[in-house]
Image 1: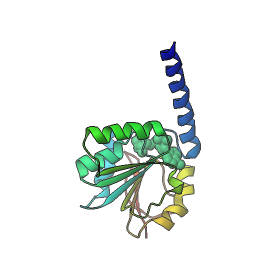
Image 2: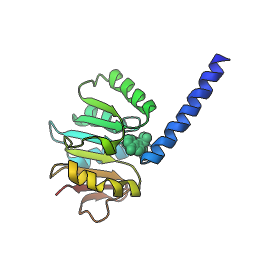
Image 3: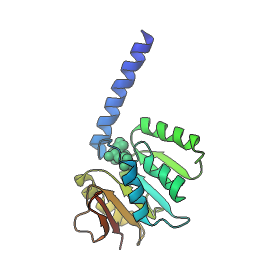
Amino acid sequence: MLLVATLISLLIASILFFLLGSIAGAPWVPTSKSVVRRMLSMADIKPGEVLYDLGSGDGRIIVMAAREFLASSVGIEINPFWIFWTKVKVLLYRLSGKVNIVWGNFFNQDLSKANIVTLYLLQHTNEKLKPKLKKDLKPGTRVISHVFTFDGWILEKSDHKSRIYLYKIP
Ligand SMILES: C[S@@+](CC[C@H](N)C(=O)[O-])C[C@H]1O[C@@H](n2cnc3c(N)ncnc32)[C@H](O)[C@@H]1O
């Protein structure tokens, strides 16, 4: 009986957190690993650079950035389930110190330390983020969005097949 109650509570919590993500910016839909690898290759990450993933979901971008591209990375995620899951992966892959995960709303976080920002959100969320990205990010920071664009910004690189769009903060 206790097990059933626990499972139902977990299911309800998952649905609520999924809705929370959707309301706050975008629902959880993972970027395929091959597209993540392509995004990170296009980012041309240099030693010592810091990558931020806004809405980091299960942590796949920040973990791959640290493991395969030797970047320091920070994920900001509103859903505590994904925070927990990413922390487990960070421990398993021994990435403490290389990967940081922040539980919160990316609209309220300081992004100024980023050299690269990745996102897979929604068109209207990208639009809403524009002033914050322009205010927080240093000139030269690469902003790499999967599927959704930053209309009006100059596109530096793109991969239309994988729907990856890279912009540079002027
Ligand atoms: C489409 S998923 C992308 C996940 C991951 N970046 C990837 O590419 O696999 C979007 C994620 O953003 C999170 N999210 C949405 N709005 C957010 C906000 N305002 N602050 C932090 N996380 C948010 C959702 O919970 C979800 O996990």
